[in-house]
Image (tube, protein in one colour):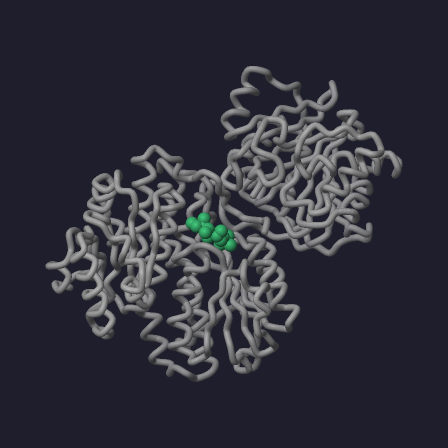
Length: 616
Ligand code: M6R
């Protein structure tokens, strides 16, 4: 959701903060703002719209020099995306400034009480209540900003990352977190606070995970972390393994294009180092013992959006390889249906960011029911893996574009490896069968590369279809979640009506949507091995074609049977059906990205969205 940065050091704070915001803007881009502690007091500038609006306004009205500052880029929840509601927010005396990510659930009662005491509000946000509460508590606790923050946090309900500065303490930044991310960056004579490490990776790779319900008191030469009750906190310091270049566009027009191109490497890295010299699969981070894994009698996969689609695909493979029943559920729905979960249930939580609130809340619910939780995550040190019993890290590298691409492919690979590991431990597959699938998986990066090399016709196709009202996506078996993912990408990026269907469902209603020229993109499974599904999909293509659809068929090389029914054919290399989503999704990503570009939309920051959804 929102992006947050705080800096205390010796460099110009404005430059550090703006550079951090530039790297965090993918988290939210409804407004942006900065607050600096200067010799003249608190200097604030904030603007609705993208960071560039703030930068233009700063160019026309430079702020006084400062070495301590905070910055915020917003995804609006409470209060529309206006200058007035942009963060930072201040107290009545304009002495302190606060930025916030999350939702303060009890802000209405807090605001009423504060107004009764005479505080004057100047925005519609929940955040401003925190500024006024801090004002009172700061006075109450002898001008100790960290203690004031702890006292305030104890009064708040909901999810929040808060960062504050006060004019009376010109070298101090105080941060706090509950259910929302905040990472500390340790530098030399300078320290940082941010929603994620990308904001300060250009300055330091040394990071500290701030735990749940902790407050950090940051100065240029010290970092003090306490729990909300004031006791010293236990923390985990680590080195970030990627460098700042990984979070740059590297010559591409958009992060999304770069991330699509990075997929062969991302899949390769996720596969690397998973097989021991005896040929057996080893999952180092799997903190669940073989005995625990043998006790499992049900798996529930949870995730949101693209991560949910990865889970849908994983179900086919994990059930097939392990014979354990697998349910897949939208994380946002999971805990509300009173799911049947106990100690023998393995919940697999899939999340690129590791911060998605719906997924976090679902996994907490699962753990309360004593289920074992395994996280599949791309972000080291984030909340979801921290709160899980076991973790499998995908090695996709930072994903900056809001639309998820390389995270999706690596989530599928990770879930497959987990499935194979379970099959190995439980003996539902022989060693040579597992080795064969691993060999097939290891061939996928080169095949994804091949797909990427043949994308020009897909770009041209996007141009041909740019004026269409609606695009439908069809698939069966693992091709069904691929269809859902293709439709999600097109909606998210090109703002077009798009829907994915299980091809067999079409005749139960959706076929009524087909008119003359309606584009229907169909993924055709390999004719080898599962010819029955292949033939059924061919029949479905004929059904839509007979009703006037323009058929765009994704089929493997050499499958001549599709030629007579396809207006356009997108060829992908041959591979087993279960692995086909790793190839078939790529043209759909390129198609959506190109469509958004043609329509002049912001590919990396589509409207109304944010990368990391840290509110429910
Ligand atoms: O960080 P997560 O993987 O938990 O995010 C889940 C979804 O919000 C995310 O996949 C979203 O659907 C993407 N923007 C889709 O491209």
